[in-house]
Image (cartoon, rainbow, N blue to C red; front, side, top):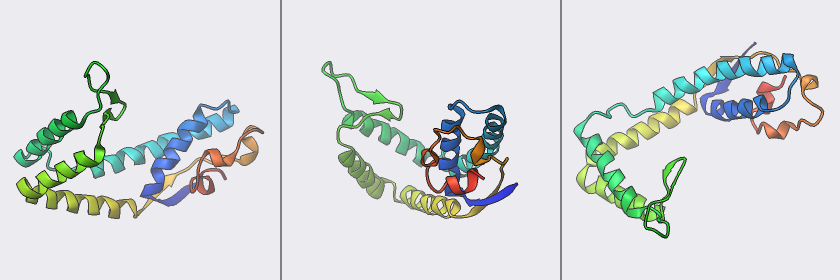
Length: 164
């Protein structure tokens, strides 16, 4: 079965399928989850590729990356020994607001054309996420789920188009 969804719905659907595959499922349901995850994952990768900023090799972007890293180091949260604290997303910031303000001020004063490109890119990404996409979905019947399964685990709006 092929369904039409907004591209922005693809990411929560993928996360829901990842949660489902960790559950103890009947073989036919486990198969359906894996098939659906593969179809949704390919859409996730396509959307992520389309979201990347195109001009990452320009001198302006490289200067931005240097400044961003410099400010991240400046505003990094530190432990008792003075070493910066990192998490899965990278450096944990002690003052993310000040970091953002200083980076924005630098962009405004030193790289206005790059800032315009960033704003345009962000607008295009938001528009992209509002467009429709077609995904092939393997049927998953509610009666195949374990008795203890709660559909809210999948999240909304995912339930209405994944569990059929």
